[in-house]
Image (cartoon, rainbow, N blue to C red; front, side, top):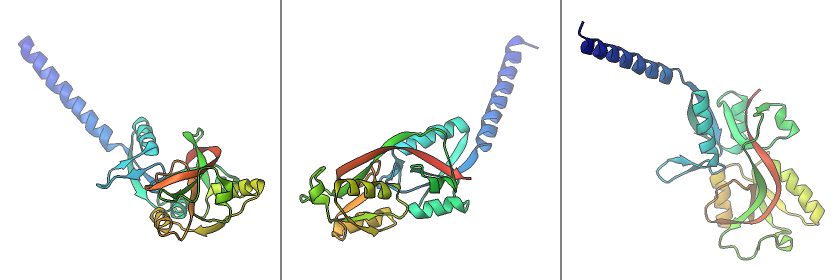
Length: 214
């Protein structure tokens, strides 16, 4: 056989094998459902595109593990419950505490740190940064099972101030309540991306993790 044709046939066979390998590799990707609380590490553009620090982080992990990720938006408490029930595979980002460790397995390494933070409406000029007297007595919106709530309680006790809490589960609902003025501040982690707000207090820097069901 002519050497040129033998080379051509060999290359065709090689390319067919290579293409088949790519197809098999793509088809063998494991589907992983990632639950996320919108605006908490993962935000959404007006045209529905996801972006953010934890979004980039999870996508890099997926490349290493050959995962195909499905991102599922959910409320904070809802996401934790969905993870327990096996409706999602991963949820985060969150801090460690003894109660959560009864139900969830944490990654061995954290992927960063965040502060507890108080956010106010960007037009609010009655509460200035780190002014505890102006925070005293205010109504604070937060979600149930917020790790930073107990930490902030200790912070208030130490600094001899007090606040009133209003529990609101959805990220959008929290923002609407702040805009309406039914709450004065939002208590959450500092990686939250909340439009039209500003931070007036940061406290207690802590590592954050993703978790799966144990």
